[in-house]
Image 1 (cartoon, rainbow, N blue to C red):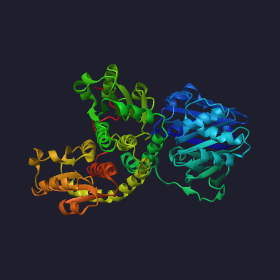
Image 2: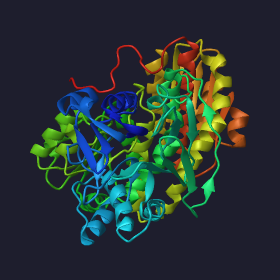
Image 3: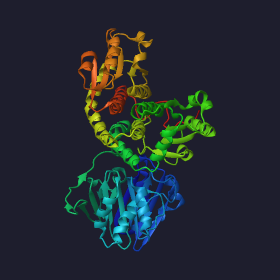
Image 4: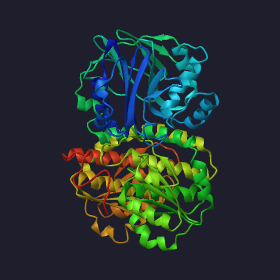
Length: 595
C-alpha cells in the first residue's frame, strides 16, 4: 500500500527536507523503497532506491534537492521486486515527465508490452512507470495534459492514484481511481498526498478527492475536473481538527479495527491482481497434474490453508493436504518427490518454519509456489512463482486482512481450476462490507454477555472449521482468554464435559450445515451452556441458539469467509472492553523468524 506526496511552491527552494518529512509520515503504510524527484525549470532531479526513508535519503542526499515542484513516493512492491529501477518516481522516455502512483495497475504487463512496441523507453517492471507512459503516449499524440490523463485513465485497469508533472511548467496533476487522494491548500503552496499525515504538518485546509477526479495544482490555487467529460467540479475546503495519531488510524480507535474495515477494499484489489496475473495459469497447470498437493503455513496462514483445501475439494474436485509447516517435514517430506506441488503461505514471507519446510521440499524436488504479502521477501524469492496478497502494510499484530486475502486467493484458484464462473467473486467485496455493517452492532451487544469468561470454545464444520480455528486464535491473541477452536462434531467426544451454566460456545454455521450445527447447539444448551450461532438468517438457528449473529446471505463458500469477520470484531471488542491494546498483544510478533 504505497504512499505518494507532491508539492507545488511559488518559487524554487530547497524541497528535499519537506519531501523526506512527508515520506516519514507515510511510513506507517508500509514500504520497501523510497524515492524523490524535484522539478526546476527544464531539469528533473530524481533520486531513489530500495531501503528505508532515512537510509536512502542520507545515501542520495535528498536534503540538497531543490525545485519549484517535488514528488516523493514510498513503494510497497507488487509489480517488480524492490530495486532502484522499480522504485518510484519514474520518468517518461525522454526524461521530461515524472510521476509516481499508489495502488495496483493490474494490466501492467500488457501495457508494458504496448509501450515498448510503440517505441517508448520502459526501464522497470513497476506499474507506477506504466502510469507515466500511459500519459506520455497521449502527450506524444498532441493531447494536452488533462486530456492525456483522461485517456490514460481508460487504459489503466485497477485501483490507483498518481501524481505527475513535467519540465518547463508550474503545476502538478493528480488523479484518483480507487486509492486515496487528498489535497492540501497552504500559504504560497499546494500539495497532494495519498493520506493526511504527510499534509497536516503543512496545512489543515484540505480537499478530499472522489474517484474519477483529476486535480491540477498551482502554487496558489487548484482546479478539479471530471475524468468522465473534463467538466470543472466545485469542492469546498475542509478544515481538519483531528490529532495525527487519529488521522493515521483513519479515525478508528485502533489499527486492528481499521484493518478489519479495509478488508473489502483489499479483497477487490487481490481479485483484480489475480485476474491479471501472468502466474496464475502456470500454477493451475501444475496443480491440475500434480500427484499430491500440499498447502503449508503456520498460525493464521495455516488456517487459510485449511480453508483452501476445503475449497479445492468442493469446487475443483481436487484433494489437497493442508499441513502445519513444522509437521510437514516429519509427516510428509519422506514421501515427497518431483511430481508433487506445494503452496507455501506466509504474510511476511520471512516465517522461519515455512522457509525451513520450503528448503526441505525443494531438496526433494517438489515444485514450490507461494502466497505472501511482502514481495521481495525470502519466500517470494525462493519459489517458482508467488501470488501477492496485495494488502499493503498490516500494522496490527493480529492478522485480519492478510488472512481474508489468503483465503480469497485459494478460493479464486479453486474456482478457476474447477472451471466455474469467476465473475461471482466480484460480489465478495460488497458482501464483506455488508457483513461489517450488519454484524458490528450484533457483536457489540454480545460482548457484555460473555466477556467475563476466560474459557470459550469456537466450533465449525467443513469450510467453517478453519474460520472457527482462526476466530479462536484471535480471541486467544488479544483477549488472553483461552478459546479452543474445534470441529463441531468432535465437541461431544470429551470437551462437552467442560460445559457449565452460561458457558459460552461459538458455533460457526455454514448454510448447508445447519442441521448438524443445531444438533451440536442442543448438546450445549440442554446442559445449561450458552450457544452463540454465527451464520446466515435461518429460523432453525434462531429457535435453538441462545444468541445469533446474522451475516448476509450468499453461498456456502462465501458464507465461510464472511463468518470470520464477526469473529474478528468479537475478539477486538472483547479485548478493548478488557482494557487491552489489540494492536500489540503481549509476547507476540508480527514476523516470526525463529524456530
